[in-house]
Image (cartoon, rainbow, N blue to C red; front, side, top):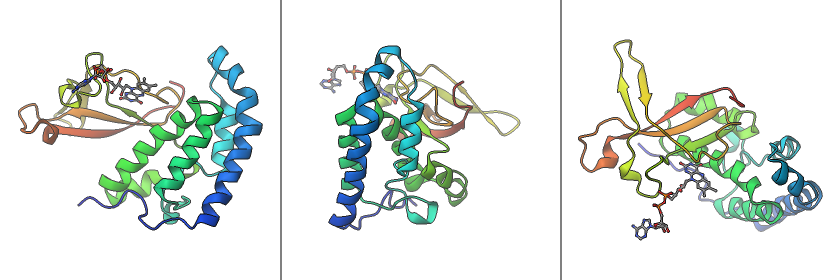
Length: 201
Ligand SMILES: Cc1cc2nc3c(=O)[nH]c(=O)nc-3n(C[C@H](O)[C@H](O)[C@H](O)COP(=O)(O)OP(=O)(O)OC[C@H]3O[C@@H](n4cnc5c(N)ncnc54)[C@H](O)[C@@H]3O)c2cc1C
């Protein structure tokens, strides 16, 4: 059964302002002075990602039991807004990771949560989400990439995906595929696979 993806308990305003002021300082001191360099040279902003990790920003909405900050969605949205003030690419790194964490929290098994969420909360393991294909993006029901169960019990995924934000540097990709082409409605025949990969490959 699906569970809550993040706390419904509002974060107290003092805690929210405290973290926002740290993020504001980080944006002013670490992002704004370096954004043009990273953007114009198309360089992965490793020191910025390390700073995001130190601030705990890969686990803002994850429960404390998994090592997250356990803050509410409004706080998360304000943090993303503040990071975007510095450079729009930075919240992209955090947001696609958030989509993966959201899916795990809402639909993952206990085993999957225990395995991935603690490393995701620290940012040691970062996630990407892969839905779009060359012929579709917002028309999700048109995806063609499929997964078929093999004789050895594993699934083989075949198809073409693109526009995967954070894809290269992630260690985990949540890939949406068709597992039952005859299902009606179509979304009932779709599965999101958790694919592990080497960051940078
Ligand atoms: C910066 C960026 C990052 C991205 N990151 C990811 C990612 O991490 N993972 C991923 O899977 N994808 C990612 N994408 C892809 C993105 O999700 C798709 O491009 C998006 O969903 C749009 O789909 P599309 O390209 O098929 O365009 P279309 O859906 O074909 O849209 C084209 C135009 O048609 C309009 N349109 C579409 N449907 C309708 C409708 N029913 N009625 C009226 N008008 C309509 C749209 O408004 C748009 O103007 C990213 C895209 C960008 C720009």
